Image (tube, rainbow, N blue to C red; front, side):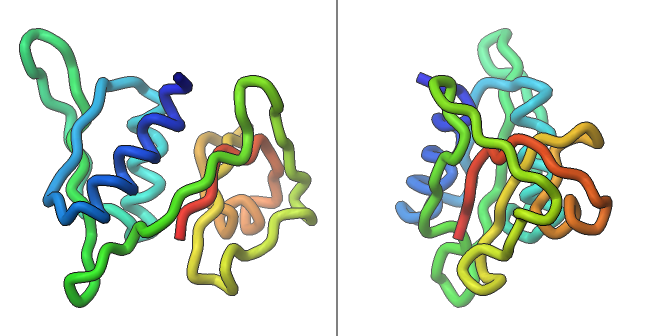
Length: 128
């Protein structure tokens, strides 16, 4: 399975199950995605820890009035089909209540930041 897909599904399932934090194997890409989600307010804290000799990424989830901030996740670009957006094609998700995460030449950015920076890129996933 795709490691990014696995990460976002674990975030969604952990938040729907009421977990305080979720951990998964560390990679620079996952760390950059988690930092982007932290900047947008979808996760509280991101930390790198070592468990049983392997680096892991631990992410604390956000709840608003005891309801999870992340209720649904959808992978846009897959290994079998890559999806790229130009800057003018990036629109808001769920009337601004969702988030589009892109891999751009300037790093992992949310849809809002990508429009601000005037760059396009590969659409990784949507959250709401």
